[in-house]
Amino acid sequence: MKLNVAALLALSVPCFAQQDPNAVEAGRLVFRMSCAGCHGLHATGGRGGPDLTRGTYSTGDADKDLFSVISNGVPGTEMPSFRGALEDANISRLVAYVRSLSHAGAVPVKGDRTAGEKLFWGKGSCGQCHRVGMRGTAIGPDLTRAGKQRSLAYLRESVVAPDADLTPGYATIVVVTRDGAKITGVEKGFDNFSARLIDLSGRYYSFLKDDVKSMEREYRSVMPSNYGRMFSANDLDDLLAYLASLGGER
Ligand code: HEC
Ligand code: HEC
Image (cartoon, rainbow, N blue to C red; front, top):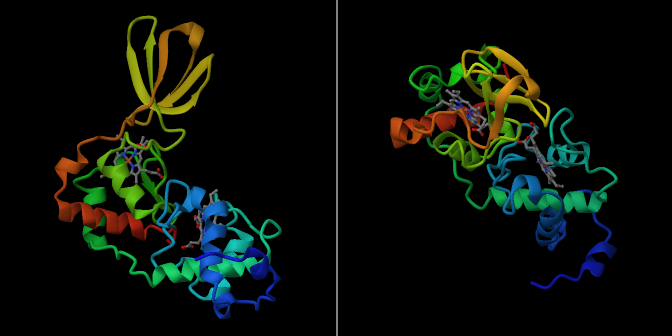
C-alpha cells in the first residue's frame, strides 16, 4: 500500500486512531523508526525491550494505557518518554499498530511456570548467579524483571546459548597474578589500568594492571553452556514460562 503521508498528517486525528483506516500502516512506519531498535522490527522484542505482540501489557491493556506508556515512558527503565518527540497523532497510530499485532496470533508461553520455578532454584542452580526479588545471588544480571524487559526469544537464547548475545557489562575477566594464580569472574569494571570482578563464590576483586602478570576481558559468559542439553524441551518451556512471568511484582 502506498501511503500519502501528507494527507495522513493533514487528517484531524481523533484521540485514538482506530477510526483512521491507515493508522495501523502509518503506525508501523513510525514504529520502524522510533521503536524497532529496542522492540525488534516486528515488535517481538529484542535485547533492549520486551515483546509487544503478547496482547497483554504490564502497564494496562486499554488503549489509553498504551498511549500513556508510550508518551511517558517507564521511569527507571530503558523505555524512554516520547512526549514531545512524537506528536500525539503518531502515538495514537503506534497504539493502533501495537494493538493490531496482538490479533495476529501471539505465541503464548507454553510451559508451566511453577515447574519452571522449581527447575530455576533446583536442578538449574540459576540462583547461584542470578537474583529474583530478594532471593539468589547477583553475580549475573538481576532477573527480577526479566519477563518484562526481554523477549521470549531472547530469554531462550540466553539460556541455551549464553555466549551468543552477551548482556553488556557481563563479560568474563581473567587475571593472572604475579605469583601465577588465575582468577576468573564476571566483569564489574575494566579499563586500561584496572580490573574489577566478582568470582563464582561471590568474592569481589580489584586489581591494578601494573600489579598483575596479565588481565584480559573475554567476550564469553561464565554462565554454563550446557543447559540446552541438561534440560528436556519440556523443561526448557517450563523454565521460560517462569522467566517470562517475572515482572517485578513481589
Ligand atoms: C531504548 C529502548 C526502547 C525504545 C527506543 C522503546 N522502548 Fe518501549 N520499552 C523498552 C523497555 C526496556 C520496556 C520495559 C520497561 C519495563 O521494564 O517495564 C519497554 C516497554 C514498553 C511498553 C510496555 C510493555 C509492557 O508490557 O508493559 C510499550 C507498550 C512500549 N515499550 C512501546 C514502545 C514504543 C511504541 C516505542 C517507540 C515509540 C518504544 N517502546 C521505544 C525499551 C524501549
Ligand atoms: C555461573 C553463573 C551463572 C549461572 C549458574 C546461570 N547464569 Fe544466567 N547469566 C550469567 C551471566 C554472567 C550472564 C550475563 C552474560 C550473558 O549474557 O550470558 C547471564 C545471563 C543470563 C540471562 C540474560 C539476562 C539479560 O537480561 O540479558 C538469562 C535470562 C539467564 N542468564 C538465565 C539463567 C537461567 C535460567 C539459569 C539456570 C538455568 C542461569 N542463567 C544460570 C551467569 C549465570
